[in-house]
Image (cartoon, rainbow, N blue to C red; front, side):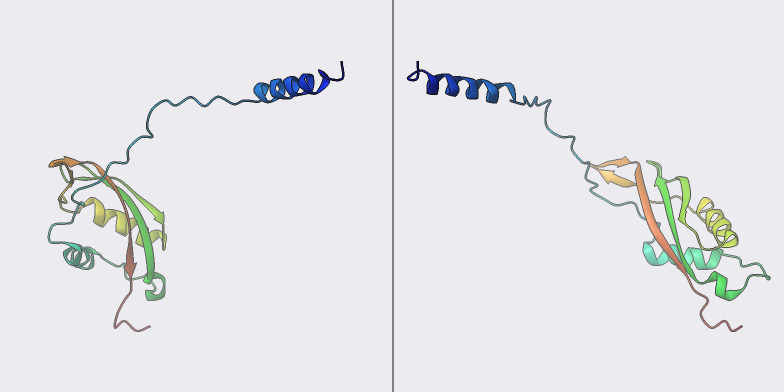
Length: 138
C-alpha cells in the first residue's frame, strides 16, 4: 500500500491540475485598423485653413481680448464628399468664441476627403485652433 501511495498522490495532483486548465478559443485575427493613404485636407493646406479662419472670424465689440486668447479643441467628421459633419467643441474657450468657431467651421468650404486604396473615406478629425490677438492693446 505504501508503494502505491506516491502513485496515488501523483494521480490526484495531475487530476487537480487538469481541473484548473483554462481553454482559450480563438475566433480569428483581431480587427484590422484601417490605414489612411491620404489624410483629409482643407483646400490649399494648413496655412490656407488658418488664413480662412482669421478672415472669417468676427469678434463682438464687447469681447475682452484676454478672453479671446487660448486654444479650442474641435472634433469633426470629414465625409467622402469633403463636407464637414458632427462638428463638436471638445475643449472650449468662452461661449462666444465656441459659437463663433462652430459658425466658421459649418461655413467652411468642402475639404479634400481622406483616401484609402484610391477611394474617398469618412475620417474623424480632432485638432486645435489657437486664438491670439496680435497687436491688440487693452
